Length: 121
Image 1: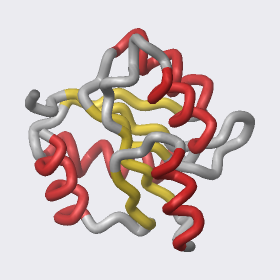
Image 2 (image 1 turned 45 degrees about the vertical axis):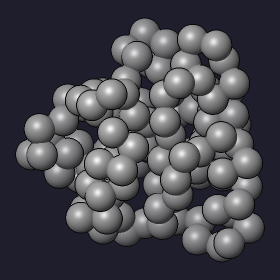
Image 3 (image 1 turned 90 degrees about the vertical axis):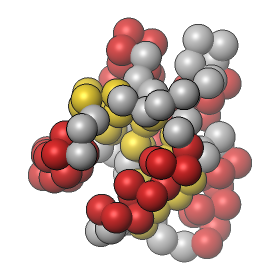
Image 4 (image 1 turned 60 degrees about the vertical axis):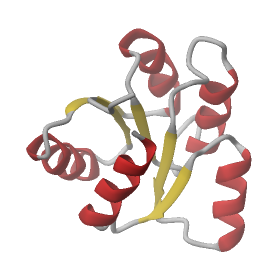
């Protein structure tokens, strides 16, 4: 299934904007969310083809949101790539255990991100 619509989840307006710009230039349609709770709601209402999930956010963190999205019947088919500043191997293992398909450490390398998106398509 081709990836056209991407949900970017990050509490930082700067990160959301930078990722949105880069991905829009590469032909993707972008939806954004500022929190884990909003990510879960938008994953159901927007049905994106991919979710880029930050981890450290106020309220529900990215691990909790990913776990919810990847276990709910309506959204479990949507791949999730964690995009976070948490770069420890244990963070990556925990992210993958929550259901993430991949894990990138900020700052995000645009080419690497596009390669990972292409690999999921």
